[in-house]
Amino acid sequence: MKWSSVDYDVVVVGSGPNGLSAAITLQKAGLRILLIEAANTIGGNMRSAELTLPGFIHDVGSAIHPLAAGSPFFESLPLKEFGLEYIFPAYAAAHPFDDGTAAILESSLHNTASGLGTDGDSYIKLFSNPVNEWPMIVSDVLGPLRIPHHPLAMANFGMKALLPAEMLVRKYFKGEKAKGLFAGMAAHGLLPFSAIASSAAGVLLMIQGHRKGWPVIRGGTQQLANALSAYFVSIGGQIQTSFRVEKLMDLPSARAVVLDLSPKQALEIAGHAFSSSYANQLKKYRYGMGVYKIDWALDAPIPFTAVSCTSAGTIHLGNSYAEIALNEQLTADGKHPEKPFVLLAQQSLFDPARTPAGKHTAWAYCHVPNGSVQDMRGAIERQVERFAPGFRERILAAHTMDTKEMEAYNPNNVGGTINGGVQDIRQLFTRPALRLSPYRTSAKGIYLCSASTPPGGGVHGMCGFQAAKRVLKDIFESGN
View 1 (cartoon, rainbow, N blue to C red):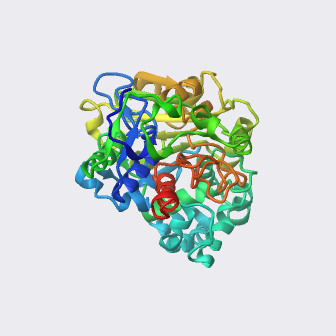
View 2: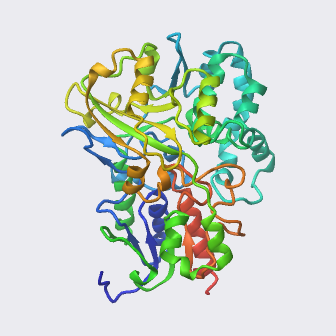
View 3: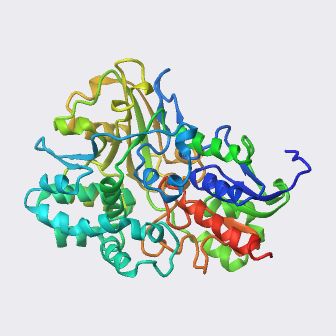
């Protein structure tokens, strides 16, 4: 690649939500920013494509966006002016059971609680304060480890989020509906339920369900990437796609380089510039469970037995708490469950423009051991059929991706992981290495901003925003 003679203040490598957020933050500060992407389209895990049949738009990576809708950084941008539109299903999520009923996450805390029977009061006790206090703590929850702005509110959140999921369920719930509903939420964290902080994902996602909802994006997740990139260009930023950076020498000169890359890729590109101690920490970084993903083109909606599932954008398929907990533990132990927990999205029910008239799409994945190449299509489809008899008869075409294909699609998905690495107590705030600032590397002027930095996985852009603030403070505000 021959660059122009114009140098840049900062070069950002990688255009996922965090790379775009870092680039925007730095460009808004009046700097000259170049954003580089290896693929021919921007977005990282925010891409959409016709994976099955012509006219069927599928989300290749992320599909449902509670954290994007609730992101303080995204909310600060005029993304609606650049084509971003959220669509909110009537219910954020549904969790069907074998008896034909379902537990529902609604926007109303009290309506959700009323569907949980005798656990309704416990549910309100568990979530009322975190939901009400969320605006006070969101910047600290979605940021690096530091003294919180509101210590008491943060402590109230942390005492719940840092519990092992098995302990939280035992403490608050007695009935199967509440236990199952929370198990499905906690399983988003890709941790066994015995792990400290395995409640964090569940608590966070349920708060978002009550605060903002769990929307789909009209036209596909790619539209969020398009809106972010269009805004970036509108304020003077530059984007270069179809260029894979293999070493630092490939980049034009700049005062700083920000890498929206996993530790593995950062080592490949810039490892020679890192201190041996820092490089060793990156080499020991843990990536955790991977995913096996499948997209379907359907000739009709999924025929769930529990009718309430047809009003939810996200469906958690795993039946009871005990079943989900067992299968997540088996996966963490390197095994493939016969009845894996399945996360399913049915975006076309709420965004019909994604398919030909009268047709539908569905998107799903299950957790597998990191690096697994086992074909899980049959196991996933059996789980859907279990709660929606007749589902298989509605399949027109399918597209699958094992962990190797997930990583080939986006190298940040190391071994098929989708959240930037294990988010247990050891890697929750100190990811990817133990340092005063997790965004600084040991090499001057080189920073990390991927989901392997705090606050971790999810489409929220806060890793990039926080990393950019560190760059501004270190280099441009200090005058170094």
